[in-house]
Length: 170
Image (cartoon, rainbow, N blue to C red; front, top):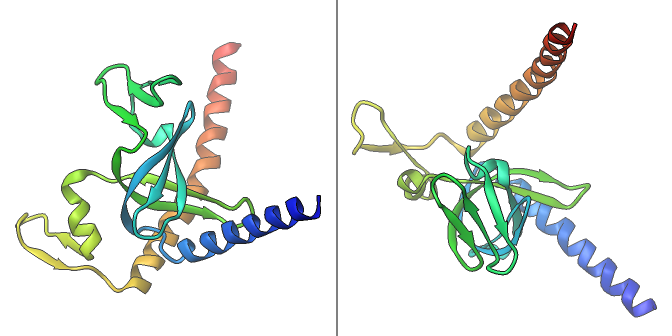
């Protein structure tokens, strides 16, 4: 009983430390492999960091994905796009929750992934000319501002939907 409790505490501390480490890398892109498939999304382990996180099914695209437990895959109904065990994917760290010890990812487009990995961005006028990315502190500030703006807009939008929904019912 004591050994099991010690193992559980050890895993809990490791998960917390991984989240703490990845929290500093929010917004960065990595290559990983699908290590788990569930009806609500895919679990990805990053090749470089050996950290596991979740890509929620809502981040996979605008279509509905069917879960096939036998084949360990999610398949899109319209496009047939499949996410299976051991598939290589490019993901971006989108959110880290230290309290719940969870890391959330979002998929990155294949075309822009290599530039993101090298820290470069593409200029809109000249698509082939790379330019240096802003300093990390500027990226972090920008990401935090975007998250704060999204959070402030979300409750108002849902309240508006609820109000309009009530009007339609009466």
